[in-house]
Image (cartoon, rainbow, N blue to C red; front, side, top):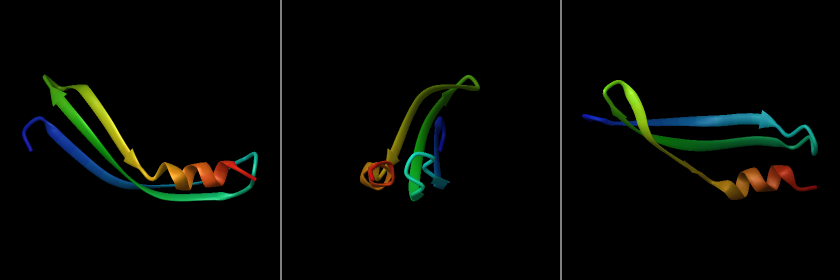
Length: 55
């Protein structure tokens, strides 16, 4: 929408230290001006990421 770009995605990985999987949906908001990204925001459930990092 104009200079705003929104991407909805999913991060999947396995934490090397704990062996726990990560499967979390994310949204990225980019503001693009003159072909360059001038702003970026990420929205993610950080509790799911934290849980994969803890034993």
